[in-house]
Amino acid sequence: MSSEWQDRWEERYASVGRLWSGEPNEHLTDLAAGWRPGHSLDLGCGEGDDVLWLASRGWRAMGVDVSPTAVARLRSRSAERGLTGVEGAVVDLAAEPLPAGPFELVTSFFVHGGPSEGSILLEDVLVQAAARVVARGRLLTAVHCVNPPWHRHHSRSFRPEVLAADVLARLPEGAWEVETCAERWRDVTGPDGEAGRRSDGVVCWRRLS
Image (cartoon, rainbow, N blue to C red; front, top):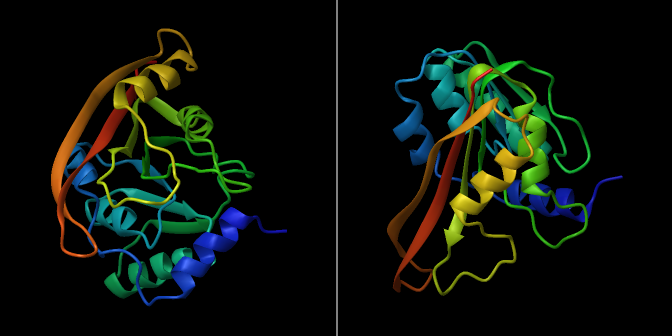
């Protein structure tokens, strides 16, 4: 039986021809452009923009999402571009185990969780993901930190330093380090044309052993 969280996201994707921009996440492209390709997993991949960017740079890239429509779009876009080594799977991060891996990189961009029934707890998902990362591999997330004044939905927001410390405390002692922990501000425009600012928290943990 699907949860309220699953139904909500499937409805959002199925109601439009494309939900997101079609461009990869800037936090991924800024950090990962120079990383050696390996096997990657994107949690809450949506229509697969980040998965496809990684695949285009030589990664064996897998994406999972709770929405069958989103995963179908990832697969279709991968085939249209002739990309190899791309996988997509429907996975409920709140209730099902992650793919076994192992992975050189696991990413999670703006997968926050919220108050609805069946929603995820991000810290739990990140700890589960870390167990699938190889030595010298990375776990990378970006989250909303400070939202603009018109923001009304009820997903969680995070301080990057708090999230970095909370997850690190639950990982094997001495096996991980925080490689990146930053708050990144940007100017944004609201739905009625009003100007505002928002910030994202970006955290990358690296496995040492």
